[in-house]
Length: 338
Ligand SMILES: [Zn+2]
Ligand SMILES: [Zn+2]
View 1 (cartoon, rainbow, N blue to C red):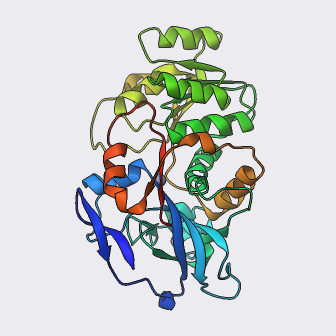
View 2: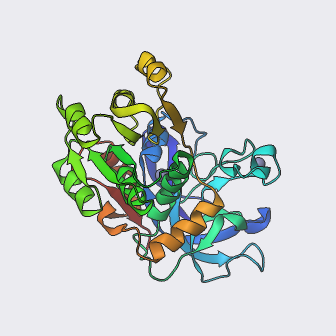
C-alpha cells in the first residue's frame, strides 16, 4: 500500500509498504480522511520520541474492509478509529482509566497510524459514524473526545466562568463544550482577531487579546474574583502561568495543551496561596467516542468552522510545515486520501 512514512525526524515521504493484515485480531480500515495535529508535529520533529520508520496519524476515518469479528463494524461501514490502545485487563482499565493503560499506546505514535491507504486497529477501537457527520469533519471527533474527557475531569457546573487560553481547534471545542455544559460566562483569549471572531460565533461571551489589561478585564467580568476554571489550550508554559494568574482563589486550572518542557518557571507561590487545583488530561476513553459521535451527530457541536485546509495525503510534508508555522487563520488541516 501507499503510505507517508517518517524515516527520521523531519523527513516524511511517500513509500510503498506492506499492507497491515488482520492476523492480530484487528480490523482493517481503508482510510479516507485524516486530521493533522500538533502531536503529529511533535512526533515529526522528534520532540515526542518514536521508533522509525513510523506512519504517523491518529485522527482517521474510513471504511472497514476486513472486520476483526462478526460483532465489530462490518465491511463497508464508515468508521472512526479510536487511536488509544489499551489491554482491558490491568488496574487502570478495570477502574475505567483505559486512556492511562501502561500496556497500551497510541496508534500513529507507538505503532503505525492513519497517514496511509490502510490502517489496522482492535475492534473495540472502531466506531460507526452517524450519517449526519461529513467525511471532512469526522476526524475532528477524535479531538473532541480528548476535550470532553478533559472537561469531565474538570467538572464544569452552571454559574461558572470559564476562560479558554488559546483558541485553536482544541480551544474552540472547549468553548463549545463549556457552553453545552451550561457555563455562565465563557471568555476566549487569543492573539488572532480571526479566531476571536470564530470563538464568538461558537458561543464565547467575551473574547480578549492577551495584553497588560487582560487581567483587569477578567476581574471586571468576574466580580473581581477571577475565573472558576481556566483551560490552558496552547501548550506553552507562559500561558500556563497566565492561567494561574487569571484563576480565582480556590479555582481550577485545566492543562489541556501538551507541554514537552522538562523544566521552566511557574508561579509556585500563587499555586500555594490561591489553592489552585491543577488538572491534567491526556487522552480519552471509548465512552467519550460514543458520546461525542452522538453530540456531533445531533448538531450540538459544530466542527465545520474548525477546518481551514484540505490537502491530498501526498502533501503531508507541506501540512507539517503549515502546522509548524504561526498563521492566525490556520485551524485543522484534513488530509484527503481519496
Ligand atoms: Zn491529535
Ligand atoms: Zn490496561
